[in-house]
Length: 424
Length: 147
Image (cartoon, rainbow over the protein chains, first blue to last red):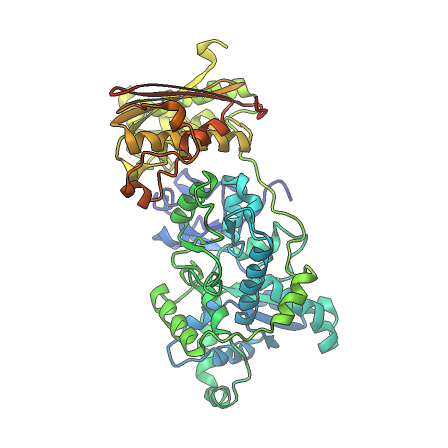
């Protein structure tokens, strides 16, 4: 597992035209263009999916679970992200969407907003029990966890050590469904439905447990049309859902799809919500400098406006956000989760990481400190020679990265078209 | 250690430039990480740079942050042209600050800057001439062991 960690993000060489749009937006400078095609440097990628947003050719694909993969399971369970409720028109109720998912082929569908509410309540207890250190950082966004491991290794201990709601939901189901349904555990497939490009990697390569409780993740983009079809075919379902609303939805938990949603329920604590990858990096930098010690909980979600801005969502995030806010305000701030259940799960350590998140060391310029310093000096002089236009024509996102690649033996000075000119 | 074996980089810091506050320390952090230094050592160096950088931004007219690294030692020198410090001993006291109310409103000027630098360095020397400027010279051992 250590070598060649596979990522869900792939560049389709048939579609990639070798333009440089994806290079600069990548927060870890993990993309290069070589021989006219872009490729991702696996060890640097944190699966944020920013590149997907910027590719004009739609060449960057995120590998998620396909419908045919579901056939491996006799009993199929869906846990949709609450973002899903914002993807359809205003008249479509969450219960109709959940019903539609059953028509699409899931045997049962479980609602996540209650678990999101539970998560926030558990975090509140955790913060009360742990007055130090500060600030704790929410660990719900898998990209934030991966970013911290690689770029802010000293902050690993500040992550709230709870598995995210999707995993908790799957854990509860995995523990109980075989008994309730009288089905063999291996026959049950628990699938998350998500707008996020990083969920697949968090399922295949979890960082705080041995094995994920989820069996896969289907992107909202892939399941959107089947849901629309199911909604159209099932007008009778709609009447059923309207008259017999069987699912309890938490107005508090629903907001987790939006930036600020996770901290909304924390009335006693000082909280800060950040969204977007660049702003997340900026704020985490400040945390590493010790500047946010008066904050109890920092929520960082790398997609703009939170998970509603996920690259695999369909509806534009502003509309989706407005719908979810409307739903949440209709449902109100009434708690639907029993406090006793929360404290029982909390005390049993049911929500906790199985092991702490460990820092991942970046590859230094050279393992030998003397040579690393020599290489850094060489790189500085290279940076001074390069034009500083950061045009991407060499295939690296900017001049500094090209200099770095040259030092690491991955590129040559001649890759820069301006240096070529100088030579002639 | 000969001068030749050290890596040098200079950063310009402008007085009043709150918008770019923290950029030099951020670059220092990246550089030190790439040299393969221990994460906690890198963090201490970044905090020291940030505090020194902020002092220039808050009080001085202009300054220069010089970083040099050898396999054993990180040396940071921050020299500014500015009003200087009248009473260094007092300035070193935790909680003492001459920050204006405006600066405090921005969350700065808690009077922890110099003591924070002292806490995170292995050696720290400060010299200042009133009306001319201040010079901070700091070192951090790369082994992570503090004196």
